[in-house]
Amino acid sequence: MAHIDLKNDLPGIRGLMAYSPDTEKPLNMLAEILLHSDDNTLSRGDREMIGAYVSSLNDCFFCQNVHGALAQHYFQCDMPFIDNIKRDPIAAQISDKLKALLAIAGSVQKGGKYVTPEQITQAKKVGATDKEIHDTVLIAAAFCMFNRYVDGLGTWAPQDRQIYVERAKIRAEEGYTNMNLQRVVPGELPEKG
Amino acid sequence: MPHIELNNDLPGIRGLMAFSPDTAEPLGVFTEIILRSNIGLTPVERELIGTYVSYLNDCFYCHNSHAEIACYYLGGDKELVDQVRKNPETANISNKLKALLRIAGQAQKGGKYVTAEAVAKAKQEGATDKDIHDTVLITAAFCMFNRYVDGLGAITPSDLSTYPLRAKQVAEKGYGNHIFKSPQPTAAK
Image 1 (spheres, rainbow over the protein chains, first blue to last red):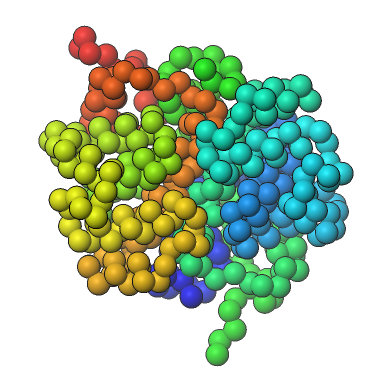
Image 2 (cartoon, each protein chain N blue to C red):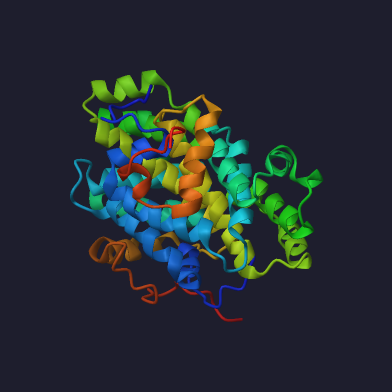
């Protein structure tokens, strides 16, 4: 149960966004630019994967499943493929560039000062641009916010991971700024006792 | 030196915002709401939460920037700001703010560190649901800002006398794009 009365049953950050519409707008605008906009040389899948990876490091069930499912949707892969990246990005079947960016994201999750010049050099060596490194750091930092927002207020999260896979199609299509907070898929609201 | 070529020499997050104006826009709007709203928590309380979290995250630029903004609102009471950053429990602040800073300290570690007891205590001291929501969101936001600034190795002025100038600018004009688009404040003015 959430730490505060959200006056709605929506899961995860959607419950917080319905509770606080003023902050919802810029937060979703940020998410749209970072994760969904096509005006970016990193693919949507890569950017969602960075978010999912950081969320898994922060142990945020809701966020890692939402964004893991989005990465799965864009990569057109299965759930174990995403889970393997989260567990061990170095061993995963992904590009060297994404590996290098995930290494930077993993350092950012610990704290800004954990990012090393060697990690930056490696990312550049495998083709990452300054803007891509910037976006990786900001995505990782933003998820350190979103994860704390979601878990720090004790929001509710559906436990059936397939629900997130179903929702990912809706999010990919709607994006973040056109989010219809009230649109739910089966199993997404808590059962009334 | 920043990890990437920012093409500007602006300090801290200002240089990052100038590098990436698309993301600067929502970040500025968001910051204005969470730190300058007068509903529930006051702007001073909001800045003190941001200062404390930035201090815990060891972000020199953010913690000194927001300490100076809080100090400006407090009419120059640097002593109080220092008390809060170093140990909120013994600082000369309300029990409600102490309880909220305890929640902030927990959320800084991670969302799951926030305890039901800390929330109950804050409510007992008079914090509303919105106060608690805002405390967690401000804390979470600084866990982003601090990582953004230090994760890219943003330019961090070591001269502490420059911080009050920027603080005055923010306190008077608020957050938003002007902090990187308009000329940086200088002591000569």
